[in-house]
Length: 333
Image 1 (cartoon, helix red, strand yellow):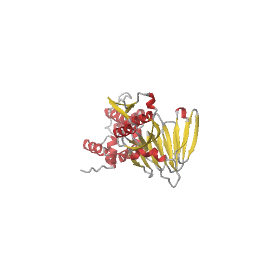
Image 2 (tube, rainbow, N blue to C red):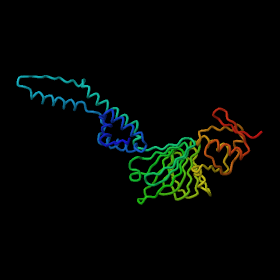
Image 3 (cartoon, rainbow, N blue to C red):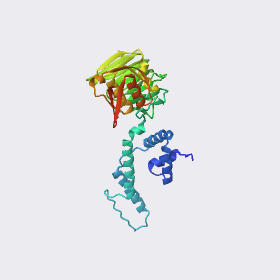
Image 4 (cartoon, helix red, strand yellow):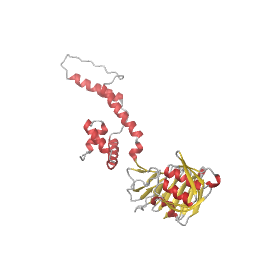
């Protein structure tokens, strides 16, 4: 049965005035991802019309006493009714209302990110394609997340927040509004319209530009610096914000993972082991120090960790074995 949820019903729900049946309808309706954004939009609208301030108890008491005086003036002459109201005593409905206000205020604070941002997550081994409200297209790599403002995106701001790795194809807008990728790792990427890859993994941070032009803003020590990148530039950021700029002839290879293809160029097995951890959540150990520095070059197609492991070890004439949740790679005996 299709549910007809109105603005009035949602506002009653936010205010705590919805019936049990209406609450159930709203909560079931809000479970649908297609409805959740509208739910948060109406919640923000309701909160803007009903600011959650702490009640002024003294003002409320004065109003109550004024009402009591008006009630007394209507009594028959000679009849007196004395009511003494102590500021330390309030009727049950006052405390109930205060509790609701407190709960709504605390909930709004705790869930403010969910209200302000739409967050996209990918699990290990999963990629996801997104089209944002401004037309920009993004592919999230495995074990990554992207936060996008729910309100005003493409008008007031085009700032997004990336954790992990993603490939961006940014739409240029007529008003030349900048698109900013914030990483939380002391560097941001500022663009107008371009294609690039941003990687913010714990062991490596890099930006690869395929098309267009981007500005890299980064923190090196105590200094804020900028670097203008051109197509083919590969920037890696080390500890302390140390930046290394290289040129690559095939920048598109750094986004090959979106097509389940993994391209290695003189990549050490130790770096490959880190890729398994970042993308698939699989721990790979290489006990032999010399073997860990072996390098791989080539393109390999795989849809999961096992396929990639089988392909790589066969190509390099290596062997592997599983020990609990670990994969141990060794040379063939």
